[in-house]
Image 1 (cartoon, rainbow, N blue to C red):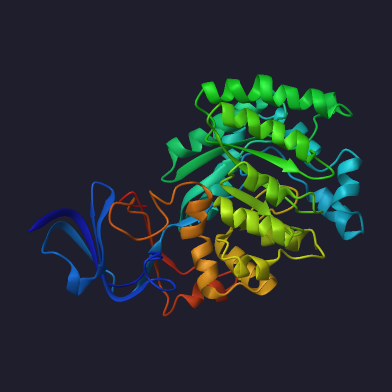
Image 2: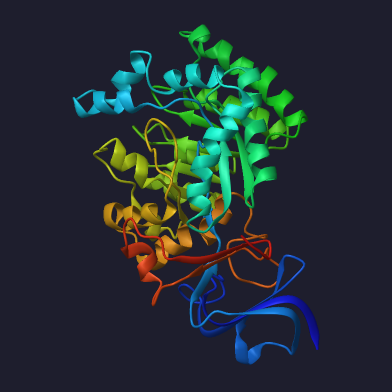
Length: 404
């Protein structure tokens, strides 16, 4: 007899285990949890004899791994509704950025916000994601562009983790844009990022990974490589905003540095996709930004499939280009805009999103030894999670074995 803390039975499982086909479906499933960790997940008929402290009859409901939003900018001040109006009137994202809008306008609002204000604003956005079954989320800085505010953003992200039932991975995105005080001098600002900000924030334990925006309106491949080289020296993982608005071969650059992920990728080419596959770098596609900016070119999903590149989906929740706080809607957009399949979409917000954060050893699938992060759904088939818009079928959410 195996002693466990809790058992969920009479359920259907989408295990997302890589050793099973497709979603890893188990029609008559059972999950057992002990100490916040999955002790067993699979067919009820194959389970060991269990002495459970408590049990939940799921009445045939579906259970997936808890959802993972692997690319967000959740902590910031203000909003950019005015710029949305400007885009509707015909202005491009690049034009708005060159007028002092875009990222820099959020920088001004974020610098003016206290840590408590940043936490309060982000918590409302986080609550919406948690309410749809999200159990793990990545949160980037990048709206401070100087040490004090970048620190404040990352501290706010750590507080969100401490005060809410969710796993948070923090990403330092100092190389997001040029701050007003360094306009025209990107070399000096990259020195600020590499020599001042990154070492200090890493030493304070605020950074899980480092990101950069490699684009014509942001930083060059050479500048990005300098940031990544410094991250390597500090033993920090890297990720990259790559090939969103043009092909600067960011995908290949990310692969060269063994990045966890390259994100956006609308203009990535086949060499870049092949390099990512070889390096184990996950493609994170972001349909919210593609939709919101009305971009003319979608990511090369066909090339990603050809090279069997893992594909993750994320909200890219941010004030300027993807004010989106629904991972369920993100899945629908991934299917309708990028033609991802149902299986690809669900894997993209569980298993592959975990890979994109370097967390697949801990979460992202229903397997023994992993964190007991579950989303329990009132659905008849997994396709409903992708098919519906503006509807939340979440019945219950479990984080580290605790119903929340």
